Image (cartoon, rainbow, N blue to C red; front, side):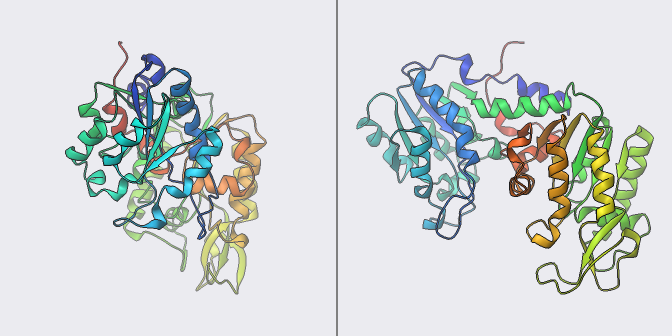
Length: 403
């Protein structure tokens, strides 16, 4: 794990090269959540890439082309158009941005703009070749620039045309300021951290975090396991979790992880009491019970108060904390208390805290504590793969500094 992080840190950044009078293409991540009226509910990913765009403007770039995806469209759809984020982007940059419908129209749009003009291309996933890493699409994007900058950490684990293939056809390919910030933040938590180091891991399935739990045992001192994935561990140690979500096929793996952690001196904490319900979406019966006494026909959906107290003490006694995955069905107000309570406790500590992207960042935001964390990643899947010890493909194809 540490080796891959060190290798990724050795990637050249935009500050390591001269971009004066160069055409710059930045792969950004504007994949932001929107409601049915296309109102942006969280513009963090746009805000986080503004420093890289401004750096290009301030350092004399001839032109700036922005490439991003939005959602997972099947073909072209207005619901996934980047037109919906254009005004917010212009407001954050405090300057005009030209929107173009296709890669083929970029050159003509740039010819009408002054030096430092900015173009935003329509959702790159409208092209079938993007996710297939099609070389023709990669070449078309490469022709638009002298310098390729990847600043899309949230897509850095994908071998797509705009995150991976394009690098083959561009001589200067470097990381943006956000990409560097992301890898440096995870490095601080894992390379030479203040100890003890705590991992808080949750979410719905052990299967999605199995590699993480196996590979991170050598890098942490304590692990809190919550969310639905804790049900598999509790069932594995002999508790009847009734209708709770349990991955029966992975109970053996859960036991192996518990044994391995013990042999390495890593303390694992599981819920001692839980909030149970008959239906997480339309609850008519809610009970707090010991973890080993879930009522028949009910399921565990949140941490109980005794568990919150226990986990809070574990958090307060830690110096570095990495959190990936909510502690319960936080989207439902009755079952958000466990996740939100731990967020409040973490915010009140002096620990260095790194929050994984996706649902974890959303939960921390809903708890009102986003600004009180040391670092919140913009990438869900990317941050998970990084914690699993994998070298992210987007970093592999960028230029490296001389050793």
